[in-house]
Structures are given as structure tokens and as C-alpha cells.
Length: 251
Image (tube, rainbow, N blue to C red; front, top):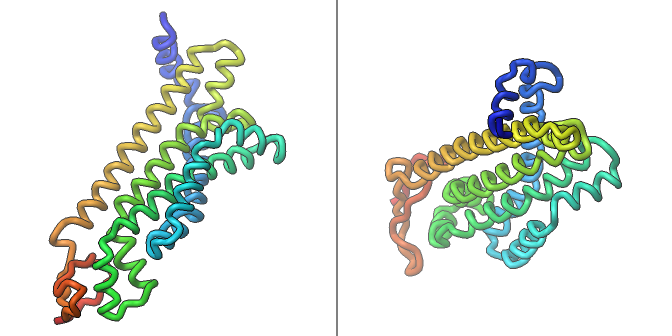
């Protein structure tokens, strides 16, 4: 049998699915690591990206920072943090957060910056303050691109989270490292297959979420028309997202 056949035979063994070191437990650890890293990265990066996109200032700096962060090798960062923080999950989590920030940051500022400037200008003419414009106009309209950034960050992290096993007994990557160390290549290939399947499933789920949000934003029935007195620079009629806007149209 070749390694692929041996790997599927390894996966078919029910004893490998149970226990603290079983596939289900490792899968839960891998998903938890991914969720924590992406969640923290989103909390840090998305508000900054939205603010940059709203003000249309600092996009060059953001692009430079995102590009520089992408260029940093995650394994090198993980090794450095492991030497500093020691064995455990702190080092891989920190490295994965840094990996996820550029995509989430770029998606947030690109999504908000892509909104037609006439739309927030029209919202200001309706008396909306900047906070409401961001929350009720720019973020809903830029949501598909923002989610696209989070989607890219998630896929990068779920694939790279295998490196967590380098310094901690955690995640699906453990099968790769144990298999390599013991020359159990069936286990190693099986671990790789599990990571690939997990990444594909997450990609499909997030793609569906992004498509749903995009359809909701662009579908004509999900918008309301607001007629605003023309001042020579704004359109007399603008279309704004339904969610969060006043229920009364202004004529």
C-alpha cells in the first residue's frame, strides 16, 4: 500500500478518533486555536481598518504594515516567541494573531474605502453623525469585502495552526510532528488530509456567508430610497442599506 492508502486506513481505525489525543479532540483544539487567533486579530484590525477607510487617511501606511507583516515568516516568529515565552500555546497564538491581522485589516479598510463617497455625504445631509454613518452606511455596504478579509485570515490561520504542535501538544499538527518523528508516515499524511478537509469546509462555509451578505447588500428589495434636496453636489435620490435607518423617508 502507498502512503495515501495507509493514511485512509489509519483514519478508518476507530481507536484514533477517541480519547484526549484522538482526532475529535485534536480537531476541537485546532478549531479553538483558529477561532481565538482570528477573533483577537479581528478585534484589533477591523476597527482600525474601518477608521482608515472612513477617513480615507493612512491607507498607504496600512498597506505597508500589512505587506510587511505578511512577509514575516510565521515559523520564525513562532520560534522567537517560544524562546521568549516558553513551551505552551502563548507563542503560537501570538504568531497566528500577527499572521491574521494583515488580511483582516486590508479587508476592513478596502471595504469601507470602496463605498461611493456620495452615499456617506448624502447620509450627512440627512443629519447622521459620523458614528452612525460608519455603523449604518459604510460597514453594511462594505461588509462583503470585510468578510472576505476575515475569510482570508481564517484560511491562513487554520492551515498554519498546525505549527502550534511545534511547541505545544495541541491541534491536528501533532499528527504531522509525531508521524515525522516516529517515521509513521501514514499518520503524518492522515494529519495533512484532516487539515486540508477542515480548511476546505471552512472555505465553503465562509464563502456562503460572504455570498449571502453580498446578495443582501446588493438586492434591490433590501434597500430604501431616500430623496434629498439637491444642493448641486449630491444626487437628489440615494439608496442606502435598510438596516438601521429611520423608517421615514425624507422628501
